[in-house]
Length: 246
Image 1: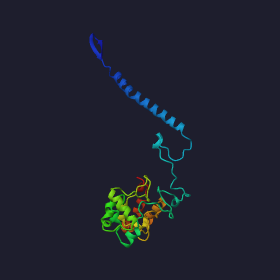
Image 2: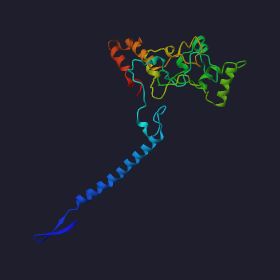
Image 3: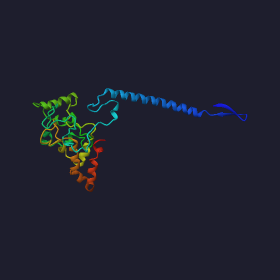
Image 4: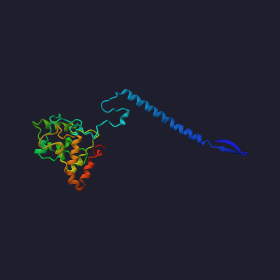
């Protein structure tokens, strides 16, 4: 405050406008400096990068969406696109730590899939059984002249997790829930092949491409069974991008 005189009497003049200007400057100047710094760093990163970078860069412009082909492209063949990482060809087999046979367990012994893959009906992931689940049965079975079973017992006694090599490995930008599909009435064999007739632990059967999934979302009979008159609406919902890309 500063003192002035009017009609012989002292008065006071407020300095509030000046203080407001100072407060605004104290906030605006650092923000302007930060903006200049970010702009300078961004220009520096872009200058160091090639004009046509392969893949999606992971520097400051990571917030930009990666370049992807449009779904409306009439020349796009989604059924031939490889979406799943770690995918194997139908004629190829991954080397697994134990030569496990679905044909024996699910076929001849008729063990229900959900006994081993207990998360299939109640979780996003079906899960791989722990060695303790395997030993519920195998502790009563002789390991004599059975090298694969001896491997299992060895992992169990050492307290080690069996290092299975993942065959069905979707990328992180794809959301898939086992429980939604199992509860809807989708059979394991529709995606994983006739596991009771052949050993499929080492190779992939389903294409797992985007077109493959969309075809199922369009034509699977469970949609009519579960939704009746609302089946067409449900088909539209499960073909929406946000269904699989959350």
